[in-house]
Amino acid sequence: MNRRPGRILVVAPNWLGDAIMAQPLLTLLKGKTGALIDVVAVPAVAPVFRRMLEVSRVIEADFRHGALDMKARWKLGRSLRLDQAGQPQYAQSYVLPNSWKSALVPFFADVAVRVGYAGEARVGLIDVRHPNPKKNTAREPMALFYARLADLPGKPLPKLAEPFLMTDPLRVIAAKVNLGLHPAQNLVALCPGAEYGPAKRWPAEYFAEVAGKLKARGFTPIVLGAQGDVPAGLTIEQLSAGAAINLAGKTSLDDAINLIAGSRAVITNDSGLMHVAAALGKPQLALFGSSSPEHTPPLSGLARVITLKVECSPCFARECPLGHFKCMREMKPARVLDEFDGLGDLITSATP
Ligand code: SF4
Image (spheres, rainbow, N blue to C red):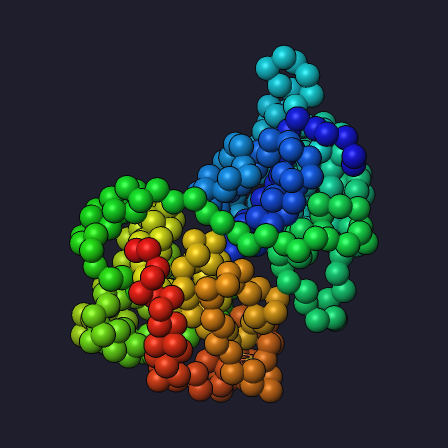
């Protein structure tokens, strides 16, 4: 563990938010070893790793969701075994997902030291195994969960750095123009999605109400999200009488990152785009329902978390098991608008 390897191989998480919450680990590894860091990532998260200063190379691996893809993993692993001089390419690897299959690429690449959580019975695949956190205890911050891998199990960690994604102002302007926006518009990005499930989604009609009020204050609300968020985007656009422009399902992840970078502020559920906004240093309101702001907080001093802390939260359920969905339904648009107004100077001084 104390050797100074030339290159480190990291197998990235497959969820956008987790990819960003893993960045403090990369910062620690970079600072500790000075090594070049290569990241194996699925296409859904590869764009964010391309924007991280710590990452030298992103190896995009289009493994099918839920599939073992043994042959593809073997092929990729063997292709990563040796460098151009015919020497072993990686001396260390870090496997961030807990699944058995995610540990296969470093194993097939003959990486000498493979670090990860014990996960799904990974004896033989992971040789520096950190104990899995107990499921029945309060969930620690995900960023800390990943960062622990930087050292031996049980070792204390320094204060973690906040995630940071690089942006290019010209690409930000290009993304706006390509999507029919004017570069000088005061955008506020609304992110009504949360892939995990509806219990993390603030109602679309509430977003619509906020959009109308933001428009009246001189902002241009835009709705960002993936294909699955198109119905919510259309609802927000319709209920706000066109105050919000629906771009959900119309952007690549890279476009969405550029548009968030080009916005004055962001209002978002606890989702991947919430973590993107944090890593871009955007003033944001992060709305938490069934999940916990202690477990997956936006890692930014410019983020304000809104949570009602109802007696049943966090339940971590995908759908409200009690049916009343109080944690989000009782978080009224007026409260969110008040908090938005409270961002004040942060919004006006944010570089669009
Ligand atoms: S059980 Fe409580 S915390 Fe969970 S979704 Fe329902 S209202 Fe929200």
